[in-house]
Image (tube, rainbow, N blue to C red; front, side, top):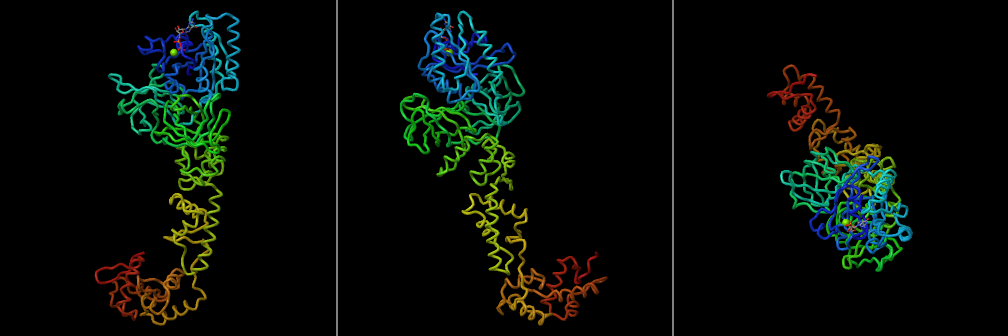
Length: 609
Ligand SMILES: Nc1nc2c(ncn2[C@@H]2O[C@H](COP(=O)(O)OP(=O)(O)O)[C@@H](O)[C@H]2O)c(=O)[nH]1
Ligand SMILES: [Mg+2]
């Protein structure tokens, strides 16, 4: 859990009392009596629960460090000194933990030894009033003194109770380790510390540092100075990395398993100004966004509103200076870059938004806001019509959840069933037209079929192919070679006068029929000849020769009668057929190819069955 509260209100002293560990670890912190960077301590509560503290600085100059500490943490120990009461950083820290959202919180009213009963009662009332309408509204307020050690046990008991009722942290199966420190230990090499969420990490795993993409192997893991084979979320974890240098790592980086995340520089979100914000949030402002332990320069484009004042809310697109590793419903904090004030917070809704935000963006984001992770899977499909299953995983959802809710899985894609049936209907209609116009053609060229599937050009050619292969599998179309046809269509020459003439000419001239070239010269179309072949009215012997099945049958009889035992020569076959060498050779090659005869020196012999 993280601490929060105004500087000098006793956060570090209370952590020390609770854990016996001083979270102020830097020499400068000791000298100035002030927390500058994040401090860490842990203890086992009476219940036996182990709890780790991220102790944050309260001074406004070190607010960036505070944000890096609370960013990944959803449990808060909020500290207010009874003598001083509510102070500016009490308010700012409350606003920050409020927009980040908490799974559990307690308020420690420290330094109770410095005030009388009446003042204490007043403070409790004042703090309670300040917490109204925030995510800490229900948090218990526990008076305590770290000097007299009064009330510290009660703080421990309140922590125990809070942990017992806090929801289990979500485990999406995608570990994210938000780095807050990187250093080198002699003998061990590079070590990073941070807060692990989302899923476990194990020794020996290959890991990826994001956004840089550097690979490293996990050589060792520790939580609370204890070595582990597997570290579990949510906990403080020190990771010993092999294969990467400290210089390649910095606060705000994420350690993850390879390929599970895609860092982004633009995302869409719901945003809301913090209470009492003085200047509105606008498209022109220069901001900093804090998410996890990362800080980025950012610009905001509000959807709908031109500007956003206290009490308002809006959907927005946020562009950041360097990629961040975001998950659906991640919370973040927005500060003004110039005046360094916390101005707003928000929730990530789309980690991979369309390049251009369309008019329906608000509708799309509203439905995501109401969706849980399982519903997100289907939203991703419906919002885009079709999405690769691998993209669904990268956005923190499960393809299986989308399929359960009606999405259709097609060759690595998940498709909106409406889009699929519209595409199928459109293509069937086009194919029917095509067959009517070109009865002799086997079907439509695939390139044209692809274009007929979707209303516009397909966003991805492989999507159109996935569509076609699906329609093939369900029997809506037949793909053959480079053409696509309706299952009922066969090119037909039946009843065509030109087909009858073609057959008459070929039959009349056999055993020396005209070549295809000569037929074309006589005005017969290639489509007609191909269709007659497809139907079996003609047999294609070679590229330039078509004959009737009758001629092929006669040739086969001769070969069966004389092809064994000693075989038949080309000239003997030619004479038996009464034809010329120009037809005899291709005919023999045709039978060779069909596996009926085999060439052996000068003769053809019948293959044994
Ligand atoms: N009298 C009294 N002093 C306290 C108490 N807790 C902390 N202090 C003192 O208040 C000062 C600031 O405490 P520290 O824990 O560093 O505050 P932080 O900035 O919130 O971490 C130190 O001098 C502490 O000794 C308390 O309960 N009673
Ligand atoms: Mg401190």
